[in-house]
Image 1 (cartoon, rainbow, N blue to C red):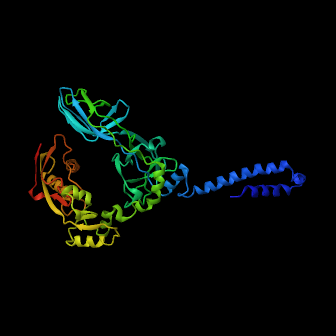
Image 2: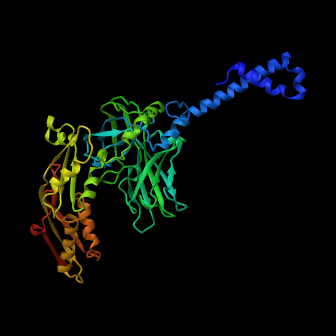
Image 3: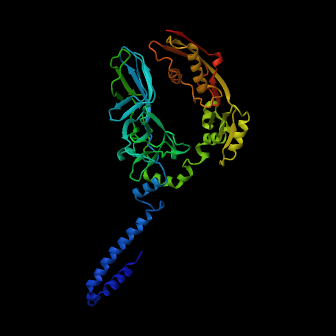
Length: 469
């Protein structure tokens, strides 16, 4: 920084070189003018120096500068956490009713709460249900131009209230709207992966970004994007025995409006505000270590599937899940458990352990858990149109089941759900005729009871029978 005397001397030198000022160079007027100009010069130089310091995270003070570093480093500040608690819902009517997941209630303090589970309440009964301080906000957007890494920014007033984002997209392919998956930095995505990433802009706005056609699917013109934002006020408190009021109309099983009362059983609290700017500045220093780009952070599954394409079933879990299942053991601390199945490689366990030994972990170790096989059977009955050939119907259904639930199928679904069975049978096209129907019942293991359990369908002991209309 230039000193005051240097600034005065420099000004006098400049003005003394001008013919019209030579006679006044030693006057008090010029001297005071030089002092005034030195102040202006030093102020300008100080601002320039301070502005330069904003380019560096360690010396940045302005919020806009820190947020520019946030955007440059693809960092996303921690989102707020909603307050949680328990509410008692009492049925004062003569018929039972059910409340769905995320049923909204309003408190006397004008805060919204939603149920964390679906419940059913019999007449005269009271049921406790967990609630969260959340309110749903929907944002719709139509894609107007083809663009790689298409971005949608949400309103600044909402940004620091967003707890969770759901993204639904209709790309006008005739299949309607589907939920797209969040993929941080588009890791492990292909050209047709229906994924999105989140980002935080220097304008204090959070947004979503879509792929470029190589990493994640690129949005076509006319695609309809619907973002469901779950907003929270963060650190709020609602004391016990406070009333909550139902939002919207809910009908009981007699199709009459429900008659209910709801009141807090416990305090609804322990929410947390969004990350403040000082916390963000500190976290930015360490973000490169935890930016989820490295395989040894959260990407073991992709790592193994890429090394061994023959794996058709793979499960990886840590000490938290293992402790919840089998109880605490000192030997499980910092341990990662791996279980996999390759129908053509009986030595896949040894190979997985050898491959994982190449991953440079700190103090974590891997443990192989052989898959525990279990089966389930189905019983399907129903009627089909007389134009259908029953043997063909049965074979088509069996083929669909083998593809999606067979032990050695490379396209098997990750879990067994009743809705998927009905969808697969309907997709066969044999039950479109009026009056055609079917019923499905299960037996055996549908939901795995242990982490390394691999279940699949046993068609040999299943029964599929149909009659004609």
